[in-house]
Image (tube, rainbow, N blue to C red; front, top):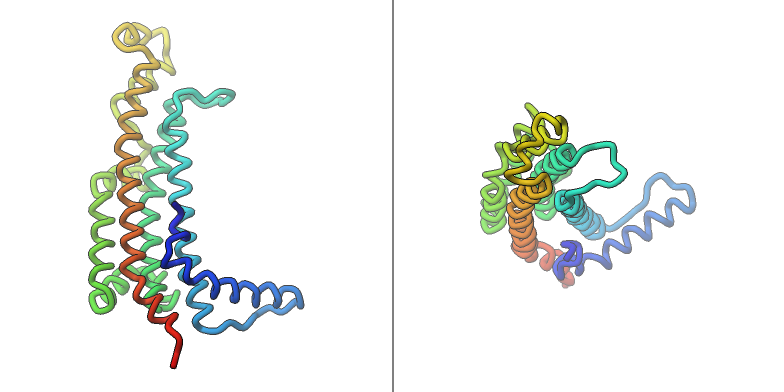
Amino acid sequence: MKHSKNIHIQQLVPLVAKALKNGLTAIQVSEQVYSAKPIEQYAHKVYSRVLEIDNAFKNIDISLEYLKKSEFVDSQFKFSEHHSFHVENYLLRLTSVIDRSFLLVGSSICMSDKDIEDFHGKKEISKKLKEFSPKAARILKKMNNQIRHLKIKRNKVAHQSGYSNKNLCVVELIEESKEEFEHLTSILSLNELKEIVISNSVTDFEQVTASMHDLVDELIGSLAFFYQKLLEPKG
């Protein structure tokens, strides 16, 4: 389920709709700016942050879909090249879920975009959470712990070299130099090797992705009291 469909986020939708209506009306009459109540601006910002998280998960799901493929018909690139590319994409997208979760938290507790998106934004958000929502702070920490075992691979991909492992290297050797390494397929066929490579990547990645979905749900739940308090009718 998309996190924008979460019951706590859905209660913001009427306010988001009002803000968007004002924006479209301004466009219609060629105005550069439009007015919206602070609560409408708040709802729109929070909702947009959740959509960014959904978008990160969508890209992760696309990577997982391609990582399950053993053949890429009509492609000029080999299986090993495709697999390596989509592992790298998955690793980079995964950390973006955490980055965007911090942005959601910052907007939810009414921090300015400037402070949230600053280089030290995460530190400032974590500091404020100690006062506003220790539970949310613990969930963000859990997120980091959940992907800790993948961070070394992710950092290597981002800063040093492309992704590979011993099984993928064997597949690549066979694909590149069939004559020299064809004897290896008498032990395991190329298709069997591909399935091992796929299983090693997908099994771990799917488990991590499911856990991250659960943690984002928990995070939104831990912030719900902010939304409810702001939505309370003012007497």
